[in-house]
Picture 1 (spheres, rainbow, N blue to C red):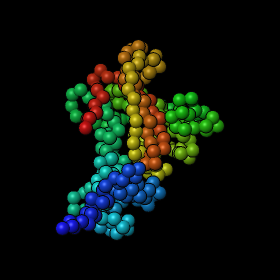
Picture 2 (tube, rainbow, N blue to C red; picture 1 turned 45 degrees about the vertical axis):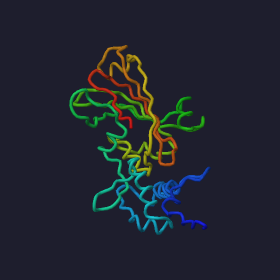
Picture 3 (cartoon, helix red, strand yellow; picture 1 turned 90 degrees about the horizontal axis):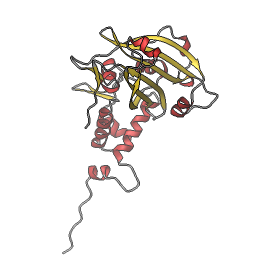
Picture 4 (cartoon, rainbow, N blue to C red; picture 1 turned 90 degrees about the vertical axis):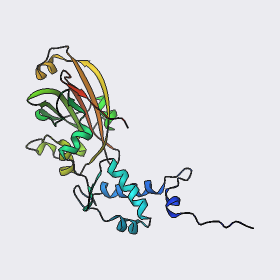
Length: 253
């Protein structure tokens, strides 16, 4: 007697990963990401329901949910119980735990205050060109600022931005503490990811004077390359940190 073949389960078919192809939920995620990149969905906006998105994309509601879960895990979306799913805003609280990894040895983590020391336009260095994908003829914006916790300087940092990504930067009357929110509000650039490298260095005479430490004192150098939602480099940041009373913390999952 010939065994009857059952029709494949729709959810299984959608989430199965054919060789050489992305699973359907990943394709749906890319489609939803494109709406963020194109500005169809702006920070703080309420997204359509899972059912409506499933109808628009002609996939199951479960596939849409899996794509939204992935984006929520990456802090791009926020789920609010009984209210729906929203595009995440670059709030201080989210930035602090997602991108700021320095914590005091005692007490609770807090977001540091910032004081801008200098800003200006310049030609990129070799490292800046390689990291930000720039040409010799391109220009960069450089920001140097000192950051403090409880009134005590803990780090001095240099931020480099491609000038073409932040037009009219020199028209700003002030630079806020949360520069990622500035990028989002003024230029529509959402920082989606960042790569960091850590290295031990000695304080230069200049940095020591700004930080109030001895020349040659051990510092933690954190180099960060931040990218937008399309994985294009946006910001190169060098932070030189005093670690007398703070440490770099990260959760490995």
